[in-house]
Image (cartoon, rainbow, N blue to C red; front, side, top):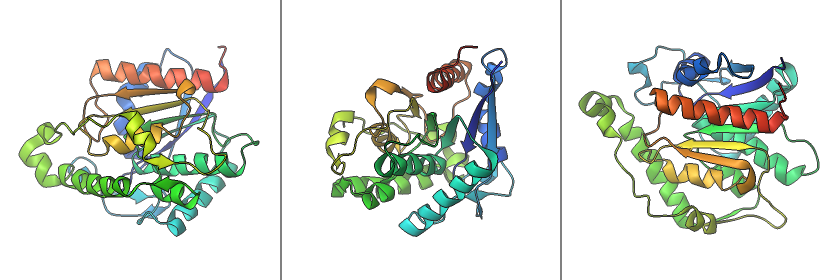
Length: 267
């Protein structure tokens, strides 16, 4: 049986072990499915815990960068390229939060600068991700001012809702519905690609929650990928990976679809 190797990139202020725990509910359902090898890695930088994470998980905590700017994100991409050269190749990549921005940045830069070369991954799974706005700006994308403001406010709201005080006082009720009146088409019009740019065509899965303050950023991330080779799923929660059986089985199906579509798996 062919093994499909998937690199797993965690969120800021967590770790490989934490990402393992966050994804175990759907990964354990795959025992009788196709053979997927999930390769979890720690980010290169020591950091403090993400908001509220230390209530559930102990240190150490890692990040791919502290500030999302051109210098630090490029250093993270160099680190990732070195990791792929040393421990890869990887068939696909599965990411959460900051890990999504790193993976999307590498895929997008490759699409713009090396369109005729094979991409670094054959498929991608984004969980609670966001559009890599700084990377997009550096690559020539035109981004409307309201996108930057919405991005800023969503990060602030996420930090508040994920914080220790909100968890202890409100629990899961801290995740409240966001205004979902802006459509994917509206969001697409807020960002314009440089001349010659086109959607990323590898199979991609975009999992986000309609109660996540970063909901719209996740939709804008999905817009970077071709409609014909992407699937989206709203788990209707917050900035998290819900662990109910129904949601876990849905995510499992999406991961299987991406892996099979990406590598042409035939058993």
